[in-house]
Amino acid sequence: MLKSKPNFYNNEKGQTLVIVFMMMIIALSIGLSVSSRYIKSLGILSRADNSARAHAVAEAAIEHLLLLPIATLESYAQNGTCGADCT
Image (cartoon, rainbow, N blue to C red):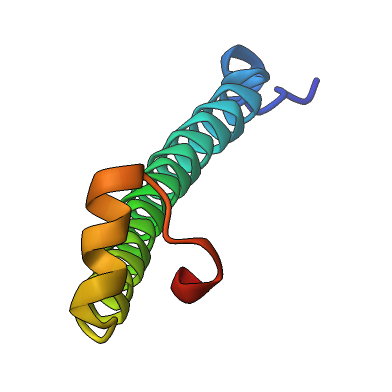
C-alpha cells in the first residue's frame, strides 16, 4: 500500500483569511488616520483664511473712515449717523 504524504496545510485553512483580514484592518486604520489629519488641517486653514478676511475688511473700514471729512465724523459722533456721506 501507498503511504499518503502528510498534508501540512490541513491545520492552516483559515490562517490566510485571518492575515488578509488583519491587513485590511491595518490599511483602513492608516487611511482613516491620514484623512482625519487632512480634514483637521483644512479646518485650520479655513479658520485662518476667515480671520485674514475679517482683518482686511476691518482695516478697509477704518481707512474709509479716516478719509471722511471731520465735519462728517463729528456729525456721526453726535447723531449716530452721517447719512449719505458715509456711503
